Length: 379
Image (spheres, rainbow, N blue to C red):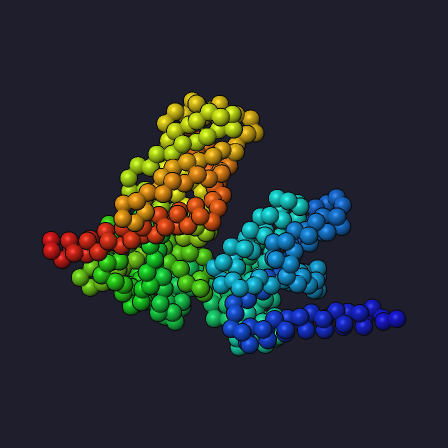
């Protein structure tokens, strides 16, 4: 039988082999892979059961990625095919879900993207440094970064931005028009004294003249940046931004594009008891619809109790002024007095009709932006 010392040595060799295999995978395939290390705080009663529940939840949340236990009870796992900003969001979701579902707290955590130039020692040194930083910041803190950028630096966000924009010369700007995200790449001209100067297109600069802020994303940024617009200069195709800050809840990260109709779309809601409600579509995505109700009092009867399943019927514009009739199953997601939001489940045919309508709205917005640029130069 192996001694305790030998078992420890084999456990360490097992972990090293697993980590080195993931590093090799990144080098060979050029994929984005995040490594997450964390300490857990178990509740006072039945700690073994709580730990088992936490492991079960962790496996589901990480798509059954390998889970390793290291010294001092720390756990390691990997988050596949994620850039840094998305990996941070997943880590925060894991933290919240563990606490809510199992009562287990993620006390401190470290997260990094595996770099193509990493070896085992460089990767683990970075994880240990982030974990020490997380302990200094206090319970619940997740410290993260890459081989080049440390986002828990004591220099604060200003130091992060100065280092980042001196290296990275391309970012993506996001804004919304009638609820639909409009994105465009921009080139960094300069960053100094909290002011970021970007080169963009004439159309984007003209659009931003009437916007108070914009969102910035980049694969190496851990979260979406929000920035106030100081000046937008369509004649130079430039924009100047200030007050850059990270935001945890980003509207840019919605899984489906949501659009607002450019003209009223009447909708009929068929309740489970056979009665009908009427309204207009406020906004539409492939997986949900928000409806303004014409008679909120009637809706009280339709959605009483636990019965929230309905059928929705409406017409959508298509090319050449045609209209498509859509009839889909839906479940009430939320409701205030005058508006109801439904999760919808269109079949393949109706899903294509909704996607086609969203594409039409996108084309309309592009035309509007082109007219804005034309009006700017003519006026």
